Length: 303
Image (cartoon, rainbow, N blue to C red; front, side):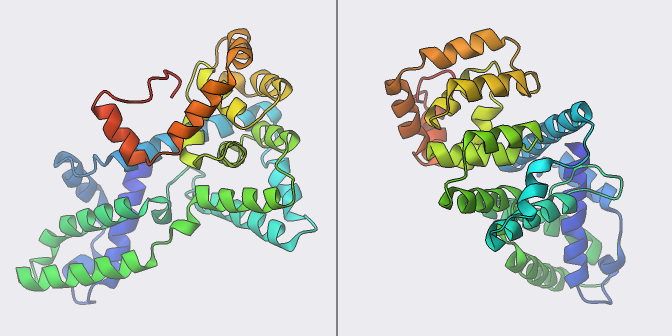
């Protein structure tokens, strides 16, 4: 997470520097380590949505790496097969997801988070925070007003290029939507995605079938102990067989220690619980967070 955060701040700083006047001292400044340290010390990087994104990506990376180590395969079969799909739109969407995954690796093969992965509000906050961190570095050559003006323009230019449609989750959602329109988001596809370690694709597929948000599905998928995953599967109309396949495959990587207890939970979930959970998850996330802070949340431990 620390490495991904450092890389993200460095990327934003480099983009802002590139938009500054050529004669600016900071335009060729490469002290990203010092900049990250300054922003960290001021607790400006303690942005909850950013931390959640980094945690999610780190968990996804751990699972994907473990699955590939078990299978001995470097690349997943599902996406590769979809690239050759008869449907041009599905083929293009699968290729876009593969390319996006490649872009989220540094030259050493380590996972990273792209600027476009940030939610819009977080992108604004992080861009302005990094811009503020660069201000002191401009003052050697320009006055404060000029520095503020130059950085404001650089921040605006970078934010104009931010595109949430390029988020990894968004690209996976597009692929799932296209497959669903052809009636192909079935249990075999979900199991194949799980066997490839395609956590985001599994989450988006289950979210589509459950009619809930992708991020909520991801949280339930990695909720631990199996109760939340079983609830997600029931909301998605999954069979007991699919639940058993997931538990027998990557179940332990999802921190499910007791598969028997998890499948028993799957069997015991009532339709009322499913309907209640779905209704709750369809409420605005900010509203749900506020209720939780007020001690008035949904009340289900698995949520």
